[in-house]
Amino acid sequence: MRTLGATILPMDALQMKREFLEYIEIERGRAVKTVENYDHYLTRYFEQMKIVNVSDISEQNIREFRLWLNRQPGTGRDSMKRRTQNYYLIALRAFLKFLRKREIPGLSPERIELAKVPERHLDLITAAELERLMKAPADAYAEAEDDEKKRAALRDRAILELLFSTGLRVSELCALNVDIDLSRDEVSVRGKGDKVRVVFLSQASKDTIREYLKARKDMEEALFVDGRPASLHRITPRDIQRHIKKYTARAGITSKVTPHTLRHVFATDLLQNGADIRSVQALLGHASINTTQIYTHVTDAHLREVHKKFHSRGEHRQ
Image (cartoon, rainbow, N blue to C red; front, side, top):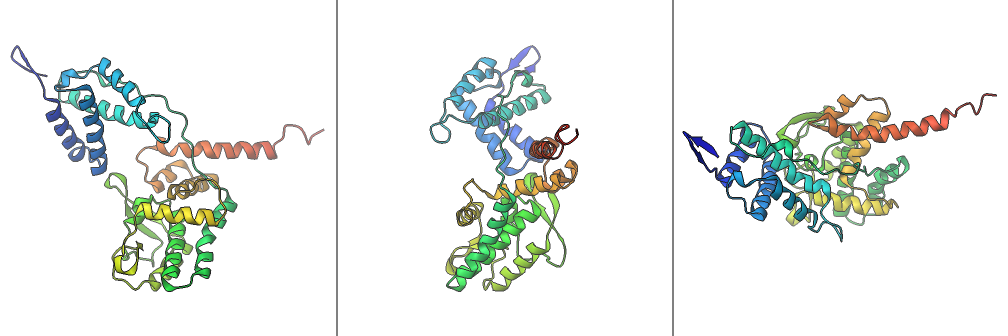
């Protein structure tokens, strides 16, 4: 509500939501996808709790909304994950902070506590599994019976090498174009929040990209394409996930492997070989060091195993 003299005017929730979304996009520089997600989360809360004015937002209906979220279906027979539920609360808390910034009376954002979530589990594979996965496209190439299948194998080999050598997000890889300068060891990519960063190419990734481009006969601008020659399109994250799933099975790997798995392996490999966490944060394009911290748990576990194996307390000293 806003005060006009002694009169308190109700503030329309939908209007304030529009102003909030414009604010985070223009003044805070949030990515369009982030703005769309916040819009979805807030709209769902407003509709479910029948919020008309911002003064309708209360601890009571937020509790009711959290209970409703917790009873929504998630994957399989499970309810919605707490991490997903927290996305709604984070959006609502940001909205309340915006109202406070505009000096509009309302619930304090600090009154919203996020649900405790279990420690995030990283999908990792062993060095031997990584070796088999990286070799799988070459084996597929050797068995290919036509040029189309050979080009697909060359493409997939280049994709795997590029993901592992750079730690790129799959969406960042899909956005690359053929004008990439392979005479240099680095390339600029546009990541989350429209932020540009530099990633570094290994010799293996450059060699496999050159080999793939040499086999291409189309005029598409995308670095990686998929589909039949008559219906080629820029490769999508879903396409890459499908191809990696195929090579995972071919390599005899039973654990789940995704494009993000290679990003995890890239990060943990750097840390285990002595890279400092700030450098890893920059290479991954994380806005917050807290996001990168998850990889230290993995390397800590590795160090514990090393200590246990090579520093047995007094066992070799009599």
